[in-house]
Image (cartoon, rainbow, N blue to C red; front, side, top):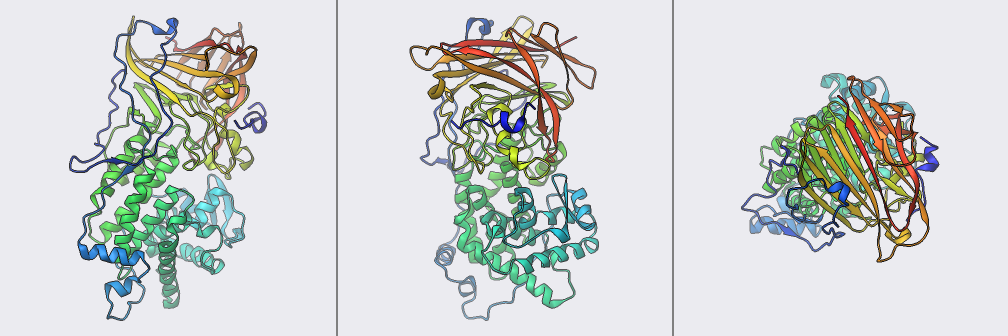
Length: 631
């Protein structure tokens, strides 16, 4: 890419298809409430320019509800159970509430959990060979510093301190083959983290992930014949559960808190005399989920990676309920049914994820394994309006379009300035993509370009003045920028068939340049043609004088071969299956530049991008382009 580390950094500032949600938002017997939490407004868009109107014959789509916090009904409990939960929340020990006149039981596990979600066998084999394998980077176990003062990159921090590696190790072979490695790493970690609450290991999210992993994969760390070592492991489980009881609400964000509540609930299920803790955990978990997930099931960070983490945690918790032969609260089962369809909305024709809000192109196998483990059978959401994404399935093509402001600062995780960016796939191949991968930085993706991967220029959309549409800050956070998005979706009729048209606009450049960016995308029902127009409209009654540099970027998929036309206004894209696509623009200058694309394993791949660039009048302008399959 054209000096990626500097170019991507900048100054902060239907057609009815078969993609419909198969799971209702709520059971008819449940009452859905919305907390008072206004989101940036969306208004019906202004009329399209005449050259894009093309014989439309449809009604405007109904306005969508905003991203809103949703309440979940708490489980039905008796008055006695309500008292237990209240007393436990006040700090009364669970043993005093469950058996006040009996000697406290020694730590032990009440059941063995059947693993639900499969891990990465390759990473597990690497562990048995003596290495952590994180996003393609190997690190010898003997050289990893587990201590609180160690400076680990974010991916290694999550894997090492969250014990995510236990799932991978469990998938690599029989328990007798894996247990020695698990015990070696487990006790090395305990030796280095003797002080409870100190260091990155005791972030609520890491502690929650660790506790869940210990409980679900307990046989790997409790197989020792040494009673002293087994007792030490059980005491570590109890100590972590007590720490989470006191600190779960101090998580960095709602997802971290939700992981902590899952761990507390699982501990209440599997550790002795845990009924008060379970009641306490269930109530906290349901309350937290209501503040984490929007009405259509998308997490408020708008991150597919965070969506996957939430589903995986609930899958592990459901496995703990099954181990105890208990039914989980109906609201938890309903939440799993709510979380899966939005995630599927961001899958392409090949079943893998698009690169949105920091995620890489997570493989179809991982997505399928997660959905299978959840037990939910659902189709992708066609219109995940509250989550902020639109999906058009025009088989064999799939179009994904970001039609929402970025997440609010308090929800953002690896937040990206991606408003009005799109991705397009055709069959097994991706034509237009976003760079993605900022959430995976610290493996093969260098940390130094993490902010660049979150910039507007790293997405297939228009950039004004080499500035982000929303300010990209450190630590995955976002500043001011896009506050309002207008969106309209409708089916239209063309001369040779039908199409789906989406029009959206954002105000991210209004304050700085006095311009509104409006984008119109029209995808034919057979997936053979995508027409687009990017318009710049004055935000006030009068346009400002002068000009501002603009660039419309189209990052190309990893298997696309680019051939520029001789006139400088078009290009041919060839795919491995022998098909050809023609890109044409009426702009005076069309060029190609280097770019990168990050896959689901955190590996960066060199790709190319098409760039329409020039100077735009502050009085407004429009730029049309066409991507069409030849033959």
